[in-house]
Image: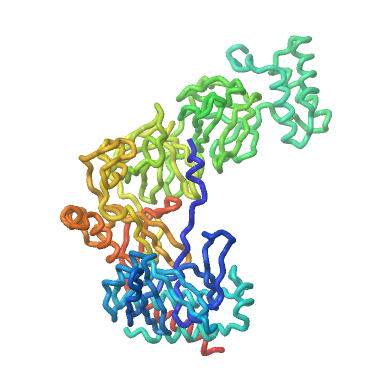
Length: 194
Length: 421
């Protein structure tokens, strides 16, 4: 009579999409896998002390570039008030790629995607975003996203000492200046014109 | 004597001995059951004392030996059913208000017994040799243990439990519980049938949502002779339904409960659900226009080739519109399910228009799917609905407007503190 056991099994839990400003994501250099498995989720550690496997951003698509012949992919830039996100959509993300092909910059776009840290041959570290979905949205949504990202940044700063990733953050970003990120969020908010 | 204790005959000495031993144990006195049984045997077999008297005598003697003022009363103090707690060893008087089919051969009977203060489920184990209880009859039940099974208090009739039918039936009015106040146990409800869902298991007879002014709760009825069917939109008085918990939320089972439709009643069902705000970050497969199996009570989603997993090809399907997506607040990704009315309201696309698109567009049903994606993806929405465990069933959904107050507040929070440093 009671619920069947098979319905109580722990289900796969989707990774939440973190809200992060471009200026913070650019500083994220440490990435890791949670587990040995090939399918274990990969994370980028944000300097304000939170791991992210997925992010959600809204900004202006400024440049779009189609690359490749056999395997077509798009690189494009999304600007927020603090800087630029470098985003890509390849044939591995068919749907995102087709969405991007239809968008002409400049346009406000919402991007759901996975952050990626890679090292250039000259040793410089880059962060890019592999898009899962790209849609055109209104300016009001962009403004709402800035509020959201500012609030998320503030929350991360406030629980910097008590987060699950505190030790990891202190190890990999020693002496991180949290006030910098607080000011970044504040400046982003000030750019919203009402 | 013969009329008073028809059940006693079934009990043998060792059961009574066990009961006495247990009673003293509840007073922190360890008494060996074999020792008790020997004392009983002497009285019953050699001196012709009836078992009831023997029990009293032996109990009192043991109490004296251990310096207790009195033996734990043979008939423990009668308790109100509404106040029973797990772990207690009690005596109750109540009326059988529900019987359901046992789920296993090791169980002789299951049901619900109630008094004016509340109701509780009971289980009579086959090996306990308890008599079969009759619906509507009142009983005194002595030496019964209150157990807990999956958070639900239950009475367990064991070998030492004495069950005596009462000559006069207890009369009382059932206490109706508000949906918002439901806790695991047994409850009487006055609710409207709100929604019927696709059964997610072949043993399920009917599943869906019922609600009253204070909120909604999901229910499940398993297949069986005791399965009532509810009709959407109808108000029911439901008497003594077992309430369990599924993934942290109450869930009502209707097997064994009495469901009486109130044909003339109107009821405004309260929302009672939670509000979630976030961005839609995924619209999954199975969203948009779907085809449902037309076989009565099936309602399953058909494949593109109109194949129902149970009823095979069904070309006489009916169309439906829904969204299965993810609403993400940055901390948690919530699975959401929007049914037709909600989708129509929030996207402005009606089922009729969607079907027309699906039938005429070269892309078919995909056209609608991508259209919904373009409308919803990457945007902020407030969704109100009920958490069904791993999915929120959205009842209302509206876009989030730019929040000026939050803007000002955040500027103060971030700017104010930075200036102070």
